[in-house]
Amino acid sequence: MKRVDEFVRLEFLPSLKDPSSFEKAEVTLDTLIYKDYFVIIMGMDEELLAAYTDRRATFANLLSMSPDDASYIEENEENERNILKTQASLDTLKSLPSGPDAEKIWSINISYSYRAKNGMGALDKSVVEISYYPEKDSFEIMD
Image 1 (cartoon, rainbow, N blue to C red):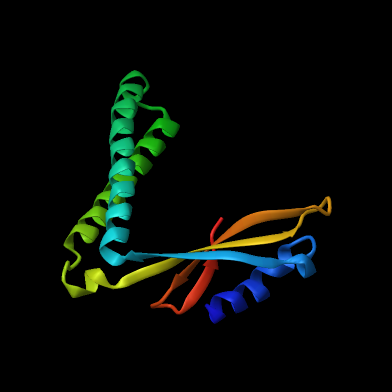
Image 2 (cartoon, helix red, strand yellow):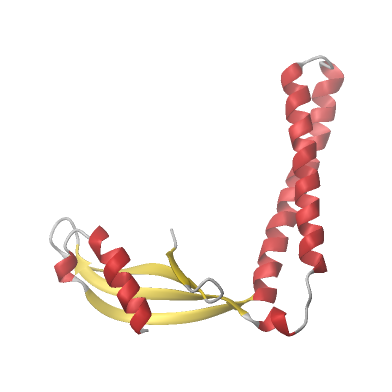
């Protein structure tokens, strides 16, 4: 928690309208392990692959009407490259080991509630979301 507080002081406080009014309210932590992270990423890749695959039919229709249209040909080729990249990503994720490493922590998500004066001078309660990545030993403010 000392490192989180230090990160907030150095990286977040300067962005406030009135940093001197900052008051820490509440901090909650939530961990995300590798296997759960991979499930999330796989779901995103599966949705993306479905969208690219749906576009394949659209391009087939467009190209049947205008087979020489350079923009349709280029977009279709890009869509096909995206299908291959996304499928390769899914295949890689599916091949990852599910042993003890799958239980390691990917990130610790921190909800850091605070009070500070806003631009009008009123004291507001807000939350900044921060992620800590143990393997990289780094923090990141989430948007």
